[in-house]
Image 1 (spheres, helix red, strand yellow):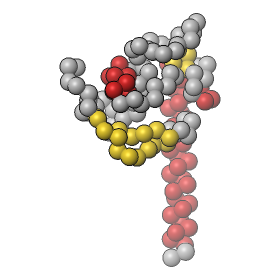
Image 2 (cartoon, rainbow, N blue to C red; image 1 turned 30 degrees about the vertical axis):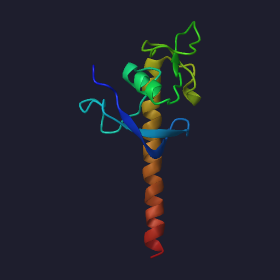
Image 3 (tube, rainbow, N blue to C red; image 1 turned 180 degrees about the vertical axis):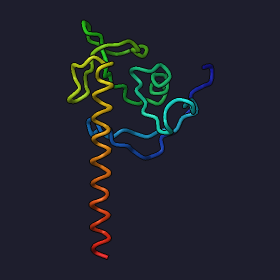
Length: 129
């Protein structure tokens, strides 16, 4: 926790499969190896460690969860409570707990479609060889 958060921009970008936005890819020294699956999607508005990292490196902080009865602006710390999704495309208005289920389903469908698209491209490549 007391470790100074250090990182560097890789020069690469990822595409957010929910909204197709380009996201800068950074490496950092505070990633928890026992949490996640090897790839980290930082959500600086809703995780204090990511928030501090984003502030230090002037990374855009996009609010995607806010309280039901209040609009969040200019955060001074991460908002880590439950709330309603905003800035989240077709998931706007969902409770963040319910949204996790819906987004997981969406990403599973996205993964299947991507794999199927790859198989078609591979078949075309093999067929034209």
